[in-house]
Each structure stands twice: as C-alpha cells, then as structure tokens.
Image (cartoon, rainbow, N blue to C red; front, top):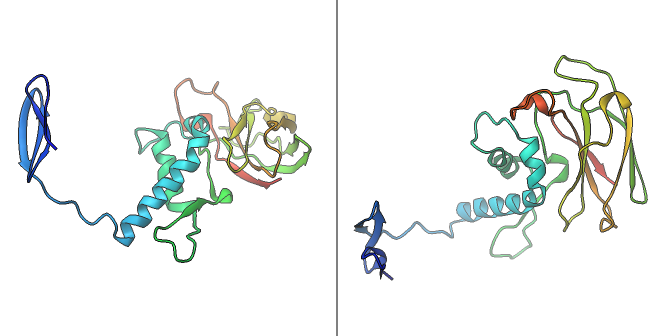
Length: 216
C-alpha cells in the first residue's frame, strides 16, 4: 500500500505501480512479481544461510578476531559466513518436512585463518570444568613468535561460545582453561594462536588457522 509522507513524497505500492523516493524526489516504476521463492534451490540456499548465520551468531566476537585482514570481503564475518555456508553444514531435514534443515559440522568449523603456523596439540584432557592441554612449542617459521598466545574456544550446543584468549604462550608448551559453569554437558573445542603485537593493523599476520580439538 502506497503512503504519502509528511514531506509530500510517496512510498509503497499502489496496484501495479511502486513509488520510491531518492534525494527528496518521488519516482515510480512498474511492479514485477518476484520469482517463485519456494523453488527447491532457493529454499535450500535460504536454509543454509539461516543455519550458518544462527551458528556463527554465538561466535561473533571470535570471528571478528579470527577473520581479520580479509582480502576479498569488506567484513571478515562475511568471509566466515560464506565459508560455513559452503563447507560446514550437514543436511538434517526430517523425512516429510516441507523445508530443508541444516546444522553446523563442528569438525569443519574454522574460527580463524592466518599466517601464523597452526597449533600442534599433543594432549587435550577434561576433568570437570578444567581443560588441560600440551602443545609443541617449536618456533618454526618466521611468522611464529615464542609469545604467540594460545586461544581456546569452547562451545556447547544451545549456548554462546566461550573464549580464553590466553591459555598460555607458545613457549610454555602447556596451559589450562576453565569452562563456564553452564557448560555441564559435552563441549566442542577449537584452538588457534593470536599475537596482536606483530602488527597493530588487522592482518592475517596476527593470527593462525584454527584447529578442531574434538568433543569433551
């Protein structure tokens, strides 16, 4: 339904005419019925976008750090969203359902990508709410530094992710993190290195790829 605004401009649809305003002037164009939104391909894509968005919403702060310095997207979040839509979803549509349903595959989730060499975890154990880890402290390529911080991300289905930005330094070779009290069931864990001291700008040089540690 078209409406006349207080400034005299018109917006909305009236019959087969659509009114819209740009720079204070009212324009009109012919209304064209959109393509069928219920085609199978469109429904699948919409469901994939919805599932990836819902999952990543609980990791938003982590994604902003893990996907810094994107070369092909204006926002790192959009790069992460695109990856997970294409690579990290499983079709779990119930038999007979009208619309497709997807859910994230934790082992394919990537929370960061960068130039620092990814952690090599030797041991990861859970006792109660405490996660203990040991890793290879070798310095390796020039992009690595002994003071790279080990970041541990924990997630329980139905909850927002929890992140420990400093579970230890690379040269420590071991560290611990404590899970939130509400994480009473099994949790999924990821790890990556972060070092904001390398470059004050947002760049892949400050981060490593994340690795999936498993469900504990």
